[in-house]
Every structure is written in structure tokens, then in C-alpha cells.
Length: 202
Image (cartoon, rainbow, N blue to C red; front, top):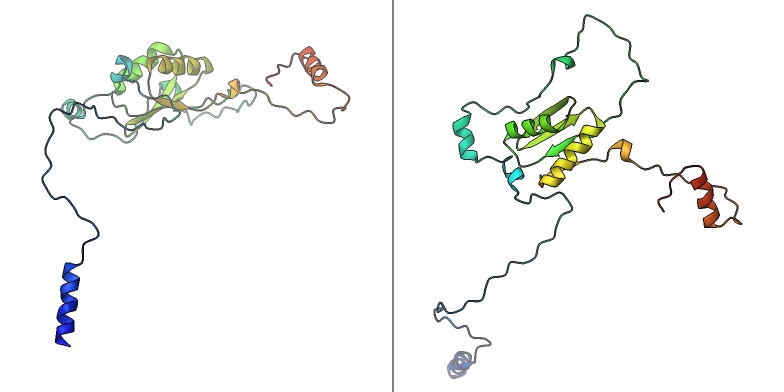
């Protein structure tokens, strides 16, 4: 019995291993000039920051901000003109006919140089505006549609990272025509719509 157990242990020790690992130290090859290639990343559909000089002036070094302003940062910073102050002593009837269309806000991200942002806005637009600051983002509320187009075009041309929503005045009219006789062709329907000064997109 002892002889068989000893023989079994001897066979287990002499059994070859399934795999081996080279533990020798790795030698640095200074002659290898193969450049390192970064993997491709998916692009996100947005107006990305392109590093232009105009967009860089909206970003300050955080270490410089501590030296320039020794006070705590405010969570909200509103630029409101004196015309926006409401006089509670007088009651004015609301006129719904002269109500202006709502203009979507413009958001700037990863910015902290608010003086330059406000200066550019004042140089571009001609009507009033309001801004709200939250962290490293600023929300710009405009009151005129033409100012909205001019400011968004300026940010696009300058490579400023921003996002907004479609202006209601720029939305196209979409209609569904029902109960059209099947005998009419597509060309006849298009001709009739064009005669009514209705543009056709597709």
C-alpha cells in the first residue's frame, strides 16, 4: 500500500505542465520607432470646441480666477435692465395680440470668462438680453429673433461650443392632405400647391 502511494506521488510530480510562462525581464528596445496610434473615437453631433482664438478667450485658467476674485462664486448671475423691473403700484391690462413669439435660449458650456461673453453679446445684438450662470455654463435669453440668428451665426463661425433649440419662426409648415382623388398624379398635386404659393419640400 505504501509502495503504491509513493509511486502515485512520483507520477504526479513528473506529469508535464499544460503551459509555461516566460518570467525573464523585458528589455527596452530604444530602436523601436513605431508611433503609438490612438484608437478612433465616435464623434458626437454638436458644435464642438475647435481651439480657435475666439473660443479660447472664453476660458480662463482656474488658478487665475482665485487671484482675480477673492469672493465666493454666485450660483446665479442675472443681467436685468431697469426696464424689466415691474411696477406693482400700477395694473396694466395684458394685450395678447402683441405677444412676441418665444425665442429659445442659447447655452454656452465649459466657459468662465463671463466679461468677454457679455462684451461680445453687446457688440452683436441690438436688443435686450438676460443671462443666467450655473457652474461653467451660461444661459442666454434673447428678446429678438434677428439677434438670435446673428448670435448663433457668430458662435458657429467662431467655433464656440453651444447648443440651442429650433426657432419657432424657422419651423416649416407640415400638412397632410386627405381625401385626394386617386386619379390625380403627384405632379398635378404639386402644381396645384405651387399655384397657392405653398412651398414643397418633399
